[in-house]
Each structure stands twice: as structure tokens, then as C-alpha cells.
Amino acid sequence: MMSKNYIEVWKNCLKVIKDNVPSISFKTWFEPIIPLKMENNVLTIQVPSAFFYEYLEEQYIDILSKTLRKEVGDDVKLEYNVVMDNNSQANTKPYTVKLPAKNKSNLINQSVSVPLDSDNRTIKNPFILPGIKKLTIDPQLNPDLSFSNFVEGECNRLARSAGYAVACNPGGTAFNPLFIYSANGLGKTHLSQAIGIEVKERFPEKTVLYVQAHKFITQFMESIRNNNRNDFVHFYQIMDVLIIDDIHELRGKEKTQDIFFHIFNHLHQSNKQLIITADKPPIELQGIEQRLLSRFKWGLAADLQPPDFETRMAILKKKTYNDGIEMPDEIIEYLAMHITNNMRELEGALISILAQSTLNKKEITIELAKQIIDKLIRSTYREISIDYIQKVVCNYFNMNVEVIKSKTRKREIVQARQIAMYFAKSFTKSSLVEIGKVMGGKDHATVLHACKMVNNLIDTDKRFKLYINEIEKKLKS
Image (cartoon, rainbow, N blue to C red):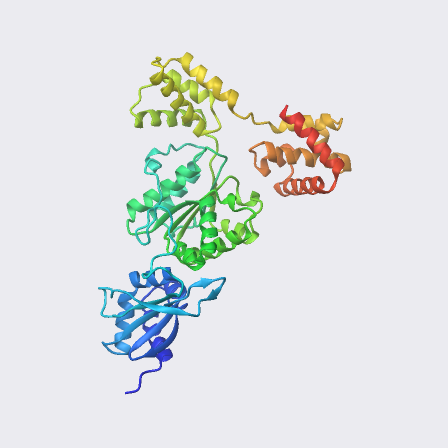
């Protein structure tokens, strides 16, 4: 009997498969497959990567087996031809390696194609993350950074509530993506990891991954060098919850942004949850493509503000309780009073006091706390206020501070105002909205335009660049 046409066989199989898997899974894992030939009841299909092949074998071998046996017969065999990227061209001289049959089906003599110059005789996942194994993925979460250890206050209530809602229903809320932003040391990483931990506790079957943006960049560059970019993409596309920390580190990296754009789209369309952190809100991120910024705004952008005194007290008490440490309230209060903007510094001061007490066998006293705090304050960068910046700029140009807050459009005043806005953005943690408010009630777009104008003039006008350098020295002195 004449063999069936391989294209028709595969087409009929796809009709059945399409009715039995989610549409997004069908598009991701079956539409890219190309039927190549069918000889002696062996159907050969081409898949885009070794990772793709392994994922099919792990997740979809049962349905592949059933549909092929129904279409061809019980003695059907399946052969995979894996495209090995080499500068975006498929290797055209593969040889076939026989692999052990999977116990999941009667499809035997499964095979893949690998390059002639390969030293490997078995197919391995070529995209390996440190500490992560395919399909038994370590989510890279720190168990100490849970919701139970996250102290809630007015400064973080919205972000914390949204994060918990996401953890209870990942991908099923309006908060997708959840974009968390704040200055350093205010709990972005803690909250994002707490969401991941809660998801794993509630939904152990879900695949969760926390990754820092700089590691994502490194992995992508390695995938290009190793010619397995497809595996990189497919790896991230299987996530149920993807947490990217410090997305601002992608600024200026066009290729990495492009690949993240496609990963983002795939996960979002699949109702998978994305959690992103940054040091600024989407509207203020520079060097990030507009198409990405627009997607960051699809969900909820929630900020973390410096905690008030009561919250700082609660954080310190939670820390001492969890560590089994007894510390007088007056010392906790002293720490909370004197370290206000960075929770890492607050906890660092607490650890320093404990270390001094333990190593030098000193009693924990208010005097010891003062010594530690004085050293920390002296070694910590002093944030310059917007008012001080305005004063320095106006003194430099011999004008009154109130003038640059006015609505006048005189060229020299507009330029002084733009310079003040530029330094306020560079030297303070204030948002563009806050800077504009202090500078005479301007909007964030005006501040952003001012910063661009100043940067352009620095590059093109030597005299203007001299102004900037001299003012900067005065601000730092």
C-alpha cells in the first residue's frame, strides 16, 4: 500500500492537536514545526531548536503519539530534525543520532539531527542557566523575602496590596504587568520576590523565575555566541510568572530590548504574569524603546516611598524578632529617627551595632548606636535638595531664585531654569513631576524636554559645557 502524503498526515494531526491544547500553546509549539518527509512509516519533522524538541518530548509526546497512530497506524515512528543555528543559517549536513525511546509512548527510534562537527552524541539542553534545570526550574527566590517579612505601611500599601492580589491570581488580574518602582533600598526586590514565593506556595505546579536584568542581558549575549537564541526565547516563553528586576539596566541595549519585547508579548498574550521593577516610573525611563514603555503601562505602576517613622520602627522590630535579638526600644527608635531614606542602610546600621557589640564585647547602648550612625552618615552621599540647586544656579547667573519659577520666556531665564531641572534630575531622587512642581508648576514633559536640551548643548556648545562643569563643582563642594 502506498504511503500517505506526509504533508496531509501532519495536517490531519494538527487538526486534532489544535482541538486538544490551548490556542497559545498550539501557536508556540506546533505551528513552527515543519513536516519534512515520510518513509517506511517514519515521519520526520523539523523543529527550531533542541530545547524545542525536549519540551515537546516532555509535554506533548502523548498527544503526538495518539494522533500519529490514529492517522498512520500503530507501527508509526517519529524522527526529529533539529535546526542548529549558525549565523542564522541552518546546518545542512546533519547526521542522525538514535536516542533511547521514551517510556511515554510506543513511538520508537526517535532521532534528532546534529552538526557533523559536534562532539556530543546525545541531545542536551544547550540553554543552561546557572542553578537552573529545565522543567525543574529553580525560581531563584530567597525564602527570607516573603510577604510575612514585608512590613506594610502607607509608603508601600498600594504596591503590596497589588502584589498580593497578583500572587493569589497570577495572570488573572488587571495588574499585568505589575510595574514596581522606587529609589534604591526601599523594597522592590523584596516585594517582587515575595510575590514569586507566594505563587509557588499557592500554585506549586506553576513555573516561576526571578531574574535580574543584567543577568538576562548576559544570558542573551551568551545565547547569541553559542548559536542557541531560539532556546533562549523558548526557555523564557514557558514561564508562568516572570519577574525581571531592575529593567532600567536594559537602557540602550536595542537587541536585548527587542528579544524581551517578543517574550513579553508572548507571555502577556498567554495570560502569564509579568512583574517588573525599576528605579523610575515607565514615563521617566530613558533609553528604553517606546513600544516597551507603552506595554509597561498596560497594567499597574506602583511606587514604594521612603517609609515613615512608624514603619521604620516596625521594620527594625520585625528584623530583631526574626533574628531572636533583644534590643532596647530607645536604640531602635534612635536608628529609625536618623536613617530615613534607605532600608538597606537601616538594616545595615542594625547589623553593625550587633557586630560591634558581639565582636568587641560591648553592651548595646545609645552611645554605641550614635557612634555607628555618625560613621554611616559621614560615609553616605548627601542628597542635594532642589532648593539648593536652584540657589546655586541662580547665583551663578546672577539672578533671583523667584525669576526661574516665573512664567517668563526670556532666553537666559529659560536656560537657567532648564539647567536647574537638569541638575535636579541628576542629583536628587525626585520624580519629573516633583521637579516640575518646584520649578514653577511645570509638567513632567517640560522637565524631560529641559534635560534633553541641556544634554544636546553639552555635546555641541563648549561654552555651555563649561557652565555645566562649573555649576556641578559648586554643587558638589
